[in-house]
Every structure is written in C-alpha cells, then in structure tokens.
Length: 177
Ligand code: SF4
Image (cartoon, rainbow, N blue to C red):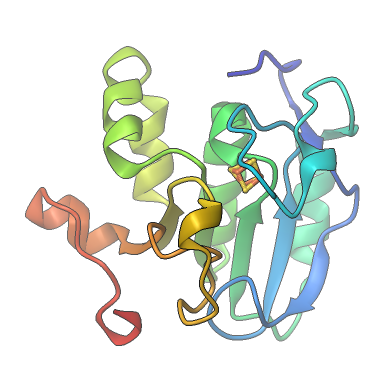
C-alpha cells in the first residue's frame, strides 16, 4: 500500500490511453497506475513496479480527462496495481460509474485478499462496489496462456463483481469461462 498526497494519484502514464481493445470488453480507455508490490516473473510492465517513479497527477485533472472521453465503452484501471492507491481508485472508479461507463480493474491480489484487506480498510469494498469486472491474481509464467481473453495466465479470473457481491461468492463472467 502506498501513502499518496490527498487529492493526487500516482500514474505510470499521465494521459488516459484511449481506444484500447485488449484491456477489457469493447473500446476502452485505460488509466495506468504506478506501483506494484507483486513483482510477477516476466511481468509485461516492470517499469510500473516502483512506487517512487511515475507522475503525481491531481485527481481533478484525471476527472477532467474522463469528462472528455467519447465513444468509449468504459474505463479500465491497470498498472501497476490500482488497489495499492485505494483512495484514488475509489474516487476515480465512482466518477467513471457516475458518467454511465463501466469499470474494469486489474489487480495482482486475489479477490479473497481484497476481502481481507477490507477488514482493516473499508475502502476496498467501496472500490469493489464501483467495479464491474475485476481481473484478479498475479501473472504466473507457468500458467501463461493465449486462450484466456483479457488475461495473461489461466489462474487469473474475470470476476463479475456485482454478481459476486450479491451471491457472497466469486462469480466469473460466463461467456469467457
Ligand atoms: S500484478 Fe501485474 S503489474 Fe504487478 S507484477 Fe504482476 S503482472 Fe506486473
């Protein structure tokens, strides 16, 4: 977890990346968070690990960029691990939802890890309430696969978060199982 100045988020890329088709369903915009504690072997973005690197961007500035998005199905939070800046993630994810767009979020934590983290900090549940699809778990080189859409390795799940919260157990997106 990282302590950020209130009102700021540490990003790997200052600008929102628009028009991605590989970071979730539909044409999406991606917000790349800086900092990741998982250090998976053969991670595609090792430059996003260092919590001291990247750009401190005012959250209001990111919201202004979100306001300008057009023709995007939704926004994906990736990194890095967005769950390591939980306050910023909650604020931005709820802002995206308020704009009527869906939210995907990648994390190296597993869903159960987040539920445990929530016992100490209820912001994790707040984040989950504003996420439609959680792509959970670390990248595992031995389980690398090209047959798992939107993921790198077969241990990672596409979790339907609203259904999961309703049922109290992990429900994955059926069409990609
Ligand atoms: S969780 Fe993602 S960003 Fe972090 S080390 Fe693993 S693959 Fe890389």
